[in-house]
Image (cartoon, rainbow, N blue to C red; front, side, top):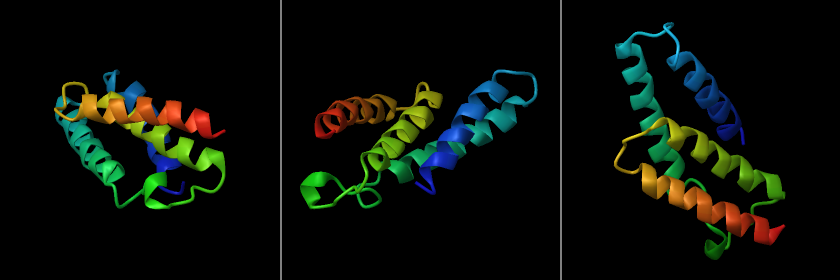
Length: 101
């Protein structure tokens, strides 16, 4: 939560700022490369183990913080070769998470 909440906020702010004239194309590219790196970190199985691995997520909102952050960051990465896979994970996890509530 200490990682995903601020990152999700940063992704949403970047989306607004990047659409303005406030950033140069080089600055946008640099930020998008940083978000891509962070998305790989978010998607690493060892960072946020799945329920089938015996990991208890605690409160229900803990996991939704994770996958909504992944969604916000993945949406920024239009055209990235992993975007569809990342978004597919978010969609399936959202459905599964709602089942656990």
